Image (tube, rainbow, N blue to C red; front, side, top):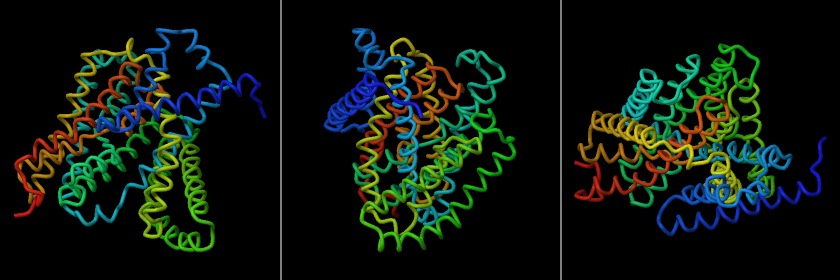
Length: 418
Protein backbone atom coordinates (compact mmCIF):
# COMPACT_ATOMS: atom_id res chain seq x y z
CA UNK A 1 0.00 0.00 0.00
CA UNK A 2 1.32 3.42 -0.96
CA UNK A 3 2.03 6.05 1.63
CA UNK A 4 1.90 9.84 1.61
CA UNK A 5 5.08 11.66 2.58
CA UNK A 6 5.12 14.10 5.50
CA UNK A 7 4.86 17.10 3.15
CA UNK A 8 2.02 15.51 1.18
CA UNK A 9 0.02 14.88 4.37
CA UNK A 10 0.43 18.53 5.35
CA UNK A 11 -0.56 19.61 1.84
CA UNK A 12 -3.67 17.38 1.79
CA UNK A 13 -4.84 18.66 5.17
CA UNK A 14 -4.30 22.26 4.04
CA UNK A 15 -6.28 21.62 0.84
CA UNK A 16 -9.26 20.17 2.72
CA UNK A 17 -9.14 22.90 5.37
CA UNK A 18 -9.04 25.76 2.83
CA UNK A 19 -11.81 24.21 0.71
CA UNK A 20 -14.11 23.73 3.72
CA UNK A 21 -13.49 27.20 5.16
CA UNK A 22 -13.87 29.02 1.85
CA UNK A 23 -16.90 26.91 0.95
CA UNK A 24 -18.60 27.73 4.28
CA UNK A 25 -17.85 31.46 4.08
CA UNK A 26 -19.27 31.86 0.59
CA UNK A 27 -22.18 29.47 1.26
CA UNK A 28 -23.20 31.73 4.16
CA UNK A 29 -22.93 34.80 1.95
CA UNK A 30 -25.10 33.11 -0.68
CA UNK A 31 -27.64 32.10 1.97
CA UNK A 32 -27.92 35.69 3.21
CA UNK A 33 -28.59 36.74 -0.39
CA UNK A 34 -31.33 34.04 -0.51
CA UNK A 35 -29.42 31.90 -2.99
CA UNK A 36 -28.60 28.16 -2.81
CA UNK A 37 -25.44 27.30 -0.86
CA UNK A 38 -24.02 25.62 -3.97
CA UNK A 39 -23.73 29.06 -5.62
CA UNK A 40 -21.40 30.26 -2.87
CA UNK A 41 -19.39 27.03 -2.86
CA UNK A 42 -18.83 27.24 -6.61
CA UNK A 43 -17.71 30.87 -6.31
CA UNK A 44 -15.30 29.84 -3.54
CA UNK A 45 -13.77 27.25 -5.86
CA UNK A 46 -13.44 29.76 -8.68
CA UNK A 47 -11.65 32.20 -6.34
CA UNK A 48 -9.07 29.69 -5.04
CA UNK A 49 -8.80 27.94 -8.41
CA UNK A 50 -6.98 28.75 -11.67
CA UNK A 51 -9.57 31.40 -12.62
CA UNK A 52 -8.64 33.90 -9.86
CA UNK A 53 -5.84 32.69 -7.55
CA UNK A 54 -4.08 30.92 -10.43
CA UNK A 55 -4.08 34.18 -12.43
CA UNK A 56 -3.12 36.53 -9.57
CA UNK A 57 -0.71 34.30 -7.63
CA UNK A 58 0.15 31.24 -9.77
CA UNK A 59 2.90 30.16 -7.35
CA UNK A 60 0.44 30.04 -4.42
CA UNK A 61 -2.04 28.06 -6.46
CA UNK A 62 0.62 25.59 -7.60
CA UNK A 63 1.80 25.17 -4.00
CA UNK A 64 -1.72 24.52 -2.66
CA UNK A 65 -3.09 22.45 -5.54
CA UNK A 66 -0.17 20.97 -7.52
CA UNK A 67 -0.99 18.92 -10.61
CA UNK A 68 -0.04 15.24 -10.47
CA UNK A 69 0.88 15.23 -6.78
CA UNK A 70 -0.08 12.15 -4.71
CA UNK A 71 -2.03 14.33 -2.27
CA UNK A 72 -4.01 15.55 -5.28
CA UNK A 73 -4.90 11.95 -6.12
CA UNK A 74 -6.17 11.40 -2.57
CA UNK A 75 -8.18 14.64 -2.77
CA UNK A 76 -9.66 13.47 -6.10
CA UNK A 77 -10.71 10.25 -4.34
CA UNK A 78 -12.46 12.24 -1.61
CA UNK A 79 -14.23 14.33 -4.25
CA UNK A 80 -15.37 11.16 -6.06
CA UNK A 81 -16.71 9.85 -2.75
CA UNK A 82 -18.54 13.15 -2.28
CA UNK A 83 -20.28 12.82 -5.67
CA UNK A 84 -21.49 9.32 -4.79
CA UNK A 85 -22.91 10.51 -1.45
CA UNK A 86 -24.55 13.56 -3.05
CA UNK A 87 -26.48 11.32 -5.44
CA UNK A 88 -27.40 9.10 -2.50
CA UNK A 89 -29.08 11.94 -0.61
CA UNK A 90 -30.71 13.10 -3.86
CA UNK A 91 -32.25 9.62 -4.05
CA UNK A 92 -33.45 9.92 -0.45
CA UNK A 93 -35.56 12.90 -1.55
CA UNK A 94 -37.56 10.72 -3.96
CA UNK A 95 -40.89 9.62 -2.49
CA UNK A 96 -42.58 7.18 -4.88
CA UNK A 97 -45.87 7.46 -2.98
CA UNK A 98 -46.21 11.08 -4.08
CA UNK A 99 -45.74 9.97 -7.69
CA UNK A 100 -48.55 7.39 -7.41
CA UNK A 101 -50.83 9.92 -5.67
CA UNK A 102 -50.48 12.41 -8.53
CA UNK A 103 -51.35 9.70 -11.08
CA UNK A 104 -52.08 10.75 -14.65
CA UNK A 105 -51.26 14.41 -14.01
CA UNK A 106 -47.68 13.68 -12.92
CA UNK A 107 -47.19 11.21 -15.80
CA UNK A 108 -48.13 13.86 -18.39
CA UNK A 109 -46.07 16.59 -16.74
CA UNK A 110 -43.00 14.38 -16.26
CA UNK A 111 -43.27 12.73 -19.69
CA UNK A 112 -43.51 15.98 -21.66
CA UNK A 113 -41.09 17.61 -19.22
CA UNK A 114 -38.60 14.90 -20.16
CA UNK A 115 -39.28 14.35 -23.87
CA UNK A 116 -39.52 17.97 -25.07
CA UNK A 117 -36.26 19.22 -23.47
CA UNK A 118 -34.54 15.99 -24.55
CA UNK A 119 -35.56 16.66 -28.17
CA UNK A 120 -34.41 20.30 -27.92
CA UNK A 121 -31.09 19.29 -26.34
CA UNK A 122 -30.47 16.46 -28.83
CA UNK A 123 -31.51 18.21 -32.05
CA UNK A 124 -29.33 21.33 -32.02
CA UNK A 125 -26.00 19.58 -31.31
CA UNK A 126 -26.89 16.83 -33.78
CA UNK A 127 -27.52 19.23 -36.69
CA UNK A 128 -25.00 21.93 -35.69
CA UNK A 129 -21.99 19.98 -34.35
CA UNK A 130 -19.46 22.68 -35.31
CA UNK A 131 -21.13 25.27 -33.08
CA UNK A 132 -20.82 22.94 -30.08
CA UNK A 133 -17.19 22.16 -30.87
CA UNK A 134 -17.67 18.50 -31.79
CA UNK A 135 -14.46 17.47 -33.54
CA UNK A 136 -14.68 13.67 -33.30
CA UNK A 137 -17.63 12.58 -35.45
CA UNK A 138 -17.65 9.22 -33.64
CA UNK A 139 -18.69 11.13 -30.51
CA UNK A 140 -21.32 13.13 -32.41
CA UNK A 141 -24.29 10.91 -31.55
CA UNK A 142 -23.12 10.29 -27.96
CA UNK A 143 -22.65 14.01 -27.37
CA UNK A 144 -26.14 14.77 -28.73
CA UNK A 145 -27.63 12.09 -26.47
CA UNK A 146 -25.82 13.59 -23.50
CA UNK A 147 -27.04 17.13 -24.22
CA UNK A 148 -30.60 15.83 -24.54
CA UNK A 149 -30.27 14.09 -21.17
CA UNK A 150 -28.68 17.15 -19.56
CA UNK A 151 -31.61 19.30 -20.66
CA UNK A 152 -34.12 16.72 -19.35
CA UNK A 153 -32.83 16.26 -15.79
CA UNK A 154 -34.04 18.54 -12.98
CA UNK A 155 -32.57 19.09 -9.51
CA UNK A 156 -35.06 17.64 -7.05
CA UNK A 157 -33.37 18.93 -3.84
CA UNK A 158 -33.28 22.49 -5.24
CA UNK A 159 -36.91 22.27 -6.41
CA UNK A 160 -38.08 21.09 -2.98
CA UNK A 161 -36.22 23.97 -1.27
CA UNK A 162 -37.66 26.55 -3.69
CA UNK A 163 -41.23 25.31 -3.18
CA UNK A 164 -40.77 25.42 0.59
CA UNK A 165 -39.38 28.96 0.43
CA UNK A 166 -42.36 30.28 -1.55
CA UNK A 167 -44.94 28.33 0.47
CA UNK A 168 -46.10 25.96 -2.29
CA UNK A 169 -44.57 22.66 -1.19
CA UNK A 170 -47.82 21.20 0.23
CA UNK A 171 -50.06 22.70 -2.48
CA UNK A 172 -51.47 20.62 -5.33
CA UNK A 173 -49.07 22.28 -7.75
CA UNK A 174 -46.09 21.76 -5.44
CA UNK A 175 -46.75 18.05 -5.08
CA UNK A 176 -47.21 17.75 -8.85
CA UNK A 177 -43.87 19.48 -9.57
CA UNK A 178 -42.06 17.32 -6.99
CA UNK A 179 -43.59 14.08 -8.31
CA UNK A 180 -42.77 14.98 -11.91
CA UNK A 181 -39.19 15.94 -11.03
CA UNK A 182 -38.75 12.59 -9.28
CA UNK A 183 -39.80 10.66 -12.39
CA UNK A 184 -37.62 12.84 -14.65
CA UNK A 185 -34.55 12.32 -12.46
CA UNK A 186 -34.89 8.54 -12.22
CA UNK A 187 -35.38 8.16 -16.00
CA UNK A 188 -32.76 10.81 -16.83
CA UNK A 189 -30.04 9.17 -14.71
CA UNK A 190 -30.93 5.80 -16.21
CA UNK A 191 -30.49 7.23 -19.73
CA UNK A 192 -27.17 8.83 -18.76
CA UNK A 193 -25.96 5.54 -17.30
CA UNK A 194 -26.79 3.83 -20.59
CA UNK A 195 -24.82 6.53 -22.46
CA UNK A 196 -21.76 5.80 -20.29
CA UNK A 197 -22.26 2.11 -21.04
CA UNK A 198 -22.33 2.88 -24.79
CA UNK A 199 -18.88 4.46 -24.67
CA UNK A 200 -17.54 1.51 -22.65
CA UNK A 201 -16.30 3.49 -19.65
CA UNK A 202 -15.44 1.45 -16.62
CA UNK A 203 -16.46 -2.09 -17.52
CA UNK A 204 -15.48 -5.02 -19.74
CA UNK A 205 -19.04 -6.26 -20.33
CA UNK A 206 -20.93 -5.90 -23.57
CA UNK A 207 -23.37 -3.03 -23.95
CA UNK A 208 -26.37 -5.40 -23.91
CA UNK A 209 -25.17 -7.07 -20.70
CA UNK A 210 -24.56 -3.69 -19.05
CA UNK A 211 -27.99 -2.38 -20.10
CA UNK A 212 -29.77 -5.56 -18.92
CA UNK A 213 -28.00 -5.51 -15.55
CA UNK A 214 -28.71 -1.79 -15.10
CA UNK A 215 -32.44 -2.15 -15.74
CA UNK A 216 -32.56 -5.34 -13.65
CA UNK A 217 -30.76 -3.63 -10.74
CA UNK A 218 -33.16 -0.66 -10.90
CA UNK A 219 -36.31 -2.81 -10.99
CA UNK A 220 -35.13 -5.16 -8.22
CA UNK A 221 -34.04 -2.36 -5.88
CA UNK A 222 -37.30 -0.43 -6.34
CA UNK A 223 -39.44 -3.53 -5.69
CA UNK A 224 -37.80 -6.41 -3.77
CA UNK A 225 -35.11 -4.12 -2.33
CA UNK A 226 -37.70 -1.74 -0.87
CA UNK A 227 -39.51 -4.64 0.81
CA UNK A 228 -36.27 -6.03 2.27
CA UNK A 229 -35.33 -2.60 3.65
CA UNK A 230 -38.80 -2.26 5.18
CA UNK A 231 -38.24 -5.53 7.08
CA UNK A 232 -34.64 -4.84 8.13
CA UNK A 233 -34.87 -1.18 9.17
CA UNK A 234 -37.16 -1.74 12.22
CA UNK A 235 -34.57 -4.19 13.59
CA UNK A 236 -31.76 -1.70 12.91
CA UNK A 237 -33.65 1.12 14.65
CA UNK A 238 -34.38 -1.11 17.65
CA UNK A 239 -31.12 -3.03 18.12
CA UNK A 240 -28.34 -0.73 16.91
CA UNK A 241 -27.10 2.53 18.45
CA UNK A 242 -28.90 5.67 17.28
CA UNK A 243 -28.02 7.40 15.01
CA UNK A 244 -24.75 5.55 14.36
CA UNK A 245 -26.43 2.33 13.26
CA UNK A 246 -28.69 3.80 10.60
CA UNK A 247 -25.96 6.18 9.39
CA UNK A 248 -23.30 3.49 8.93
CA UNK A 249 -25.73 0.97 7.42
CA UNK A 250 -27.21 3.43 4.93
CA UNK A 251 -23.78 4.61 3.75
CA UNK A 252 -22.56 1.02 3.51
CA UNK A 253 -25.53 0.17 1.27
CA UNK A 254 -24.87 3.35 -0.74
CA UNK A 255 -21.27 2.31 -1.42
CA UNK A 256 -22.25 -1.29 -2.20
CA UNK A 257 -24.79 -0.13 -4.79
CA UNK A 258 -22.25 2.32 -6.20
CA UNK A 259 -19.60 -0.40 -6.41
CA UNK A 260 -21.99 -2.73 -8.25
CA UNK A 261 -22.98 -0.24 -10.96
CA UNK A 262 -19.34 0.85 -11.37
CA UNK A 263 -18.38 -2.81 -11.81
CA UNK A 264 -20.93 -3.45 -14.57
CA UNK A 265 -19.75 -0.39 -16.52
CA UNK A 266 -22.22 2.22 -15.24
CA UNK A 267 -21.01 5.15 -13.14
CA UNK A 268 -21.06 4.62 -9.36
CA UNK A 269 -23.40 7.58 -8.87
CA UNK A 270 -26.32 5.70 -10.43
CA UNK A 271 -26.08 2.84 -7.94
CA UNK A 272 -25.93 5.32 -5.05
CA UNK A 273 -28.97 7.17 -6.42
CA UNK A 274 -31.12 4.01 -6.75
CA UNK A 275 -30.13 2.81 -3.25
CA UNK A 276 -31.15 6.25 -1.96
CA UNK A 277 -34.55 5.98 -3.66
CA UNK A 278 -35.11 2.49 -2.20
CA UNK A 279 -34.09 3.46 1.34
CA UNK A 280 -35.76 6.87 1.37
CA UNK A 281 -39.07 5.41 0.27
CA UNK A 282 -39.21 3.16 3.36
CA UNK A 283 -41.60 4.25 6.10
CA UNK A 284 -39.02 3.10 8.68
CA UNK A 285 -36.32 5.47 7.40
CA UNK A 286 -37.54 8.44 9.43
CA UNK A 287 -37.30 12.13 8.55
CA UNK A 288 -34.95 12.55 11.50
CA UNK A 289 -32.64 9.86 10.08
CA UNK A 290 -32.73 11.55 6.66
CA UNK A 291 -31.88 14.88 8.26
CA UNK A 292 -28.84 13.40 10.04
CA UNK A 293 -27.55 11.88 6.78
CA UNK A 294 -28.23 15.16 4.95
CA UNK A 295 -26.39 17.27 7.55
CA UNK A 296 -23.40 14.92 7.56
CA UNK A 297 -23.02 14.94 3.77
CA UNK A 298 -24.16 18.47 2.95
CA UNK A 299 -21.84 20.19 5.42
CA UNK A 300 -18.68 18.15 4.87
CA UNK A 301 -18.62 16.35 1.54
CA UNK A 302 -20.85 18.60 -0.61
CA UNK A 303 -18.60 21.67 -0.12
CA UNK A 304 -15.54 19.61 -1.08
CA UNK A 305 -17.19 18.62 -4.34
CA UNK A 306 -18.59 22.00 -5.37
CA UNK A 307 -15.44 23.91 -4.39
CA UNK A 308 -13.41 21.37 -6.41
CA UNK A 309 -15.38 22.33 -9.55
CA UNK A 310 -13.67 25.72 -9.54
CA UNK A 311 -10.28 24.01 -9.14
CA UNK A 312 -10.71 21.87 -12.27
CA UNK A 313 -11.47 24.48 -14.92
CA UNK A 314 -10.49 28.06 -15.69
CA UNK A 315 -13.90 29.69 -16.01
CA UNK A 316 -12.48 32.85 -17.60
CA UNK A 317 -10.59 31.26 -20.50
CA UNK A 318 -13.30 28.63 -21.14
CA UNK A 319 -16.30 30.97 -21.10
CA UNK A 320 -18.09 31.25 -24.45
CA UNK A 321 -20.94 33.78 -24.40
CA UNK A 322 -22.73 32.51 -27.52
CA UNK A 323 -22.50 28.86 -26.44
CA UNK A 324 -23.66 29.62 -22.90
CA UNK A 325 -26.57 31.73 -24.14
CA UNK A 326 -27.78 28.99 -26.51
CA UNK A 327 -27.59 26.32 -23.78
CA UNK A 328 -29.54 28.53 -21.35
CA UNK A 329 -32.20 29.22 -24.00
CA UNK A 330 -32.53 25.50 -24.80
CA UNK A 331 -32.80 24.69 -21.10
CA UNK A 332 -35.52 27.29 -20.43
CA UNK A 333 -37.52 26.57 -23.59
CA UNK A 334 -37.47 22.78 -23.27
CA UNK A 335 -38.51 22.52 -19.62
CA UNK A 336 -41.03 25.36 -19.57
CA UNK A 337 -42.77 24.31 -22.80
CA UNK A 338 -42.67 20.59 -22.01
CA UNK A 339 -43.63 20.70 -18.32
CA UNK A 340 -46.06 23.59 -18.79
CA UNK A 341 -47.88 21.82 -21.63
CA UNK A 342 -48.00 18.55 -19.69
CA UNK A 343 -49.45 20.29 -16.62
CA UNK A 344 -52.08 22.06 -18.72
CA UNK A 345 -53.11 18.90 -20.60
CA UNK A 346 -53.49 17.04 -17.31
CA UNK A 347 -56.35 19.36 -16.38
CA UNK A 348 -57.14 21.41 -13.29
CA UNK A 349 -54.57 24.16 -13.83
CA UNK A 350 -54.74 27.45 -15.72
CA UNK A 351 -52.09 28.44 -18.26
CA UNK A 352 -50.41 30.74 -15.71
CA UNK A 353 -50.27 27.94 -13.14
CA UNK A 354 -49.01 25.50 -15.79
CA UNK A 355 -46.20 27.86 -16.82
CA UNK A 356 -45.34 28.36 -13.14
CA UNK A 357 -44.99 24.57 -12.82
CA UNK A 358 -42.67 24.69 -15.84
CA UNK A 359 -40.53 27.34 -14.15
CA UNK A 360 -40.41 25.14 -11.04
CA UNK A 361 -39.25 22.11 -13.03
CA UNK A 362 -36.56 24.23 -14.70
CA UNK A 363 -34.25 24.35 -11.64
CA UNK A 364 -31.14 22.23 -12.43
CA UNK A 365 -28.77 23.00 -9.55
CA UNK A 366 -26.35 20.40 -8.26
CA UNK A 367 -27.62 17.55 -10.43
CA UNK A 368 -26.66 19.29 -13.66
CA UNK A 369 -23.19 20.07 -12.31
CA UNK A 370 -22.65 16.45 -11.23
CA UNK A 371 -23.85 15.27 -14.64
CA UNK A 372 -21.45 17.71 -16.31
CA UNK A 373 -18.41 16.70 -14.27
CA UNK A 374 -18.96 12.99 -14.97
CA UNK A 375 -19.33 13.75 -18.69
CA UNK A 376 -16.16 15.87 -18.62
CA UNK A 377 -14.19 13.11 -16.85
CA UNK A 378 -15.36 10.57 -19.44
CA UNK A 379 -14.45 12.75 -22.43
CA UNK A 380 -18.04 13.29 -23.63
CA UNK A 381 -17.82 17.10 -23.36
CA UNK A 382 -15.02 19.67 -23.36
CA UNK A 383 -14.30 22.35 -20.78
CA UNK A 384 -16.23 25.08 -22.65
CA UNK A 385 -19.41 22.98 -22.68
CA UNK A 386 -18.86 22.17 -19.00
CA UNK A 387 -18.53 25.83 -18.02
CA UNK A 388 -21.71 26.65 -19.98
CA UNK A 389 -23.60 23.83 -18.22
CA UNK A 390 -22.47 25.04 -14.79
CA UNK A 391 -23.58 28.60 -15.57
CA UNK A 392 -26.91 27.29 -16.93
CA UNK A 393 -27.45 25.27 -13.73
CA UNK A 394 -26.86 28.37 -11.60
CA UNK A 395 -29.06 30.64 -13.74
CA UNK A 396 -32.00 28.20 -13.79
CA UNK A 397 -31.75 27.53 -10.02
CA UNK A 398 -31.53 31.22 -9.10
CA UNK A 399 -34.39 32.25 -11.39
CA UNK A 400 -36.84 29.41 -10.74
CA UNK A 401 -38.35 30.73 -7.49
CA UNK A 402 -38.69 34.39 -8.55
CA UNK A 403 -40.25 33.40 -11.89
CA UNK A 404 -42.77 31.13 -10.16
CA UNK A 405 -43.76 33.93 -7.79
CA UNK A 406 -44.02 36.40 -10.66
CA UNK A 407 -46.22 34.06 -12.68
CA UNK A 408 -48.54 33.43 -9.74
CA UNK A 409 -48.70 36.97 -8.35
CA UNK A 410 -52.45 37.32 -9.01
CA UNK A 411 -53.31 33.92 -7.55
CA UNK A 412 -54.56 33.01 -4.10
CA UNK A 413 -52.84 30.34 -1.95
CA UNK A 414 -55.54 27.86 -2.99
CA UNK A 415 -53.82 26.97 -6.23
CA UNK A 416 -55.33 24.63 -8.78
CA UNK A 417 -58.74 24.49 -7.08
CA UNK A 418 -61.96 25.29 -8.94
